[in-house]
Length: 217
Ligand code: PRP
Image (cartoon, rainbow, N blue to C red; front, side):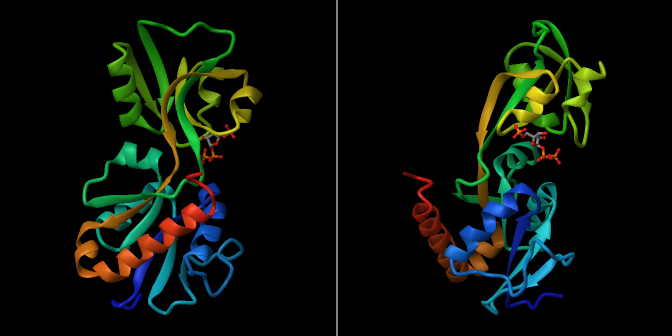
């Protein structure tokens, strides 16, 4: 259990984490043991008042919304998909930048009428195709979206694109740009009131760390 007086920061596992840790270090927060090489999920830091928990990105908004963590670091893609109810989105950390896009097989023309779409971003996809007046049959997947058009499960996918290597390697090309994505700092609404000084200081330090990293240059 975490002490009640501790400020808990929920971090996203995976590719965001590698860019998160240097930013936290610049803001003066360092775990007492290496996060990447441990199976632990809960970490104390050099500041006794701050602890870190390591979660799947899609669980970060849930932990923060319910106040199990006071603040979280999570991709904008997941905030778009799961909503920001109960949260304040306070800072663009300008890390883990990528794009949320539709994509399809390079040798097929996009359909303008009805399209089968495989994605883990069901809400984002629903909104996107509706806004373009295209009837979409949405198929929920949990990973390896790029396989769906190859296996004729879907005509298009909605997924994040970074280098574009995964699409290219699977004979696919990006189509519509839906949104530019980066990681955001979110805060539980109640924590913002009850731990205002501590959280304001964290936002301030992280904001300076973002500037130092040249994200806003
Ligand atoms: C993401 C995404 C793509 C890939 C895009 O998957 O789902 O598959 O990265 O990156 P690229 O454009 O640089 O090839 P990730 O590896 O994060 O795993 P996930 O399927 O668990 O989301």
